[in-house]
Length: 458
Ligand code: ARG
Image (tube, rainbow, N blue to C red; front, side, top):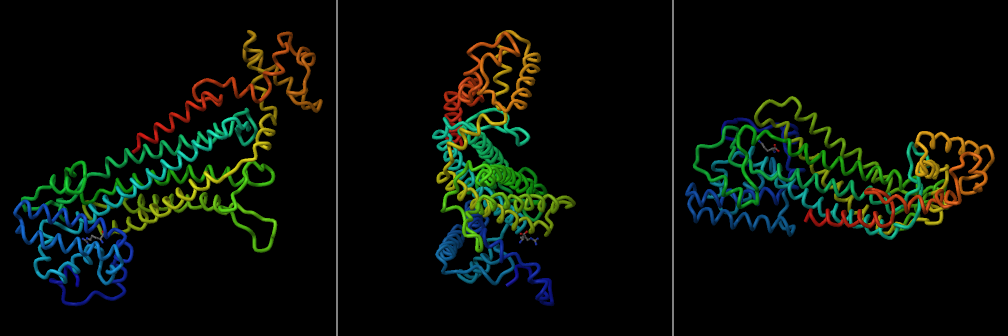
């Protein structure tokens, strides 16, 4: 049964019907749709717009419909969209009184409400998943706070740091992602219901009451905006894209860290796969997929940006196309975050390889320059001398750690025995005590900041 058949004499063409229908995908919002209807109906009853007993009949039936879909007894099929499906089902259960539910409401403000409820739920779930991921990274960082490794710039060994410091860098990104979502939630959590089709309603509704019943913080202030705004979708998708981008970056690192050339990461059997022809292979497929799925979500964001770009006020059916990107982003993101948290917990790192790599590529050259600078030499001069030392090392096949004090002294009188420990990666790490640095105590502080940030998102 269509909700709008009155002014038509012909049936909708079957292909056009298939093209128009959104139930195959917007059924994912059945819970939000029914919850929204229960609140709307309760408000209609409270305001005396429909009779209190009628409101009771409708809400009881709606609760039953929700329970029936939840337990699989009722399948949402055979209607234009989830709104039509629920209303048809309601009328088939309670008769004509069910036809009063749509008083003072349009599917335009209804779909905007459902979508906000869905996005709000998605945000809450994602924040909880980010919390687990930040905790998993912080835990790993704690156990790897003494594992030295090279920090890279331009993908070349640059300065020694620790694996704990490295993992914390990503943990801070994911903590910011959670904060960003929390902020986005404020703008999502506003009720558009009551905007009607576009110019609001003549019925004396109480929008504040509906908002309260649905846990919204307030109501939209302009009905044209209320039905046509999808900024909140774009904002959510852009938060989702940012999270995926972070996931993609760390997984890019994990992919090459797991290869023989690096060998930093030992892939857990539970999260890697083999080859059908090469028996020796253990591939980082999970990490590659975590990197690859970023593309989908960037696509979801881009598609809604493009969708909204030229739309005049107020509601346009184009906006039905925002659903699949939202559902896809939510589903993909949840799966990726769940898998990656488990991966981080299981992942093991080859500490010997990481420690051994830390001093490679003359990564302690900055320490040498700093050493001279701390003896009073202008840093620029110290840099120049150290550059010459590195060149000499390259030409003589030595590392900074293999040089003798006598050899150092040929470059500057300011060198003494202290230089031998200054250029050790461990001392380079221990002396980076400044806020943000990799010294063990400073890293401990960063980890506690992360844990506190995670608590704040609760
Ligand atoms: N399925 C529609 C959507 O998602 C519901 C709103 C329909 N409104 C309309 N005027 N055709 O946008």
